[in-house]
Structure formats: structure tokens, C-alpha cells
Image (cartoon, rainbow, N blue to C red; front, top):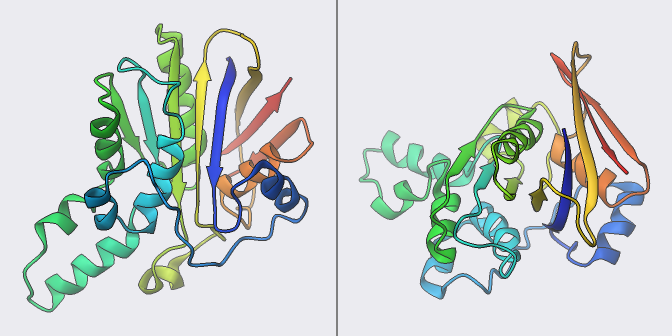
Length: 240
């Protein structure tokens, strides 16, 4: 199914402007900075409670202000979610310490999504999704389904960062601290980019970097097609 991208936003440490991203895409070296986004559109009390993962998600999501309405469905996707927060909660449990209700409520996979819909007063359906190394592609497929059912536009937000230190020995790909937001539409219009996602069964050896990192390097690069092979599926994005 062909979709149309009407708006796109991304944030990673040191990569904020279009020029930053275009220069990065030439080498695609993963940033390692601990910098966090400012999330100025989020109320200060909420902002103070967020880890970097939550800030990343809300930085790009709130950048879509003005293009959304209360009936715009929202998909938040993340392979791992907020592992730094969940690690701290598990450590507290192991040490017999009481859990912070606030920390627990913000550790769940749909926490950033819930905060965003409250801030933006969105009453349309929303979904938090995780699907392993193919998470971004499956979120895109989910958006296709909603558009096919009649939604005029869907906001897709994807956010991930390297695993917390405790989980690093189990990491199976190189990840970057970044988030992207893409507003997808079913119909063409001024300034909209036509994009298609194709998939075929059959995969290959796992790639070295995360799907989001590969996608961002492609999006801000010059190639028309991005093909990614995972264990069971071959995914291909094309823009026209």
C-alpha cells in the first residue's frame, strides 16, 4: 500500500536540523552522547519526571502540534521501551525497597503515548507496539491498516536507545538514542512524499544496526530504496 508522508521529525544527540541529519546520513555513525532533548512543549512538572527515553518520544511527537486533531490515531512503537527505568525498579524490588508509584506508572510501554494523548487532548484510538527487531516496520504496517479503514492520517512515533548497562551483554544490534515521528496520510497533497513498504517472507543474517538507525540514514540520504532483511522477513521501503 502506498502512503504519503506529510510531516517528518527526528531527534538524536547532536542531530536536530535537516542539515545535521543529512551530514550524518553520509556516514551514519551512531551518536553516543548523553544529551537529552529539551521537550519545551511538555509541562515542566511532567518533563521533570521523564527519563531520556520519554523525552525523546515526546520531543518528536509534540513537534507535530498544529498538524494533528483530536481524531488523529497515534501509534507509539519501541523495541525495548524505557529500560533504564525498569532496571531501577527491578533493582529496588531485589533489594526489598518500596517502588515509586510515579516511576512504575511511567515504566510501562505505553507511558509516553498516554502522556502525549493527554497533553494534546487526543481522543482517537492509540496503540503502543513492540515487535522485536522489526518493530518499526510492524508499526508502519499498523498505520497502513488504520488508513485503509478510513483514517485520513495517522501519527507514527518510534523511539529507542541503547539498552541499559545491565542488559548490554544481551544486545544483538547497535542502537542509537533517537526518535522519529512521521505523519502518514492516505491521499496525496502539496508537499507530501509518496512512500511504499513491501515485505516478503524469508530473511537473512541479522543486520548490525537497528532498523530505526538504518531507516533514518536512508530517509535523510539520497537513495530511493531501503531493503532490510531480518530473520524471517525482507522489508523494503521505496519513495517516489
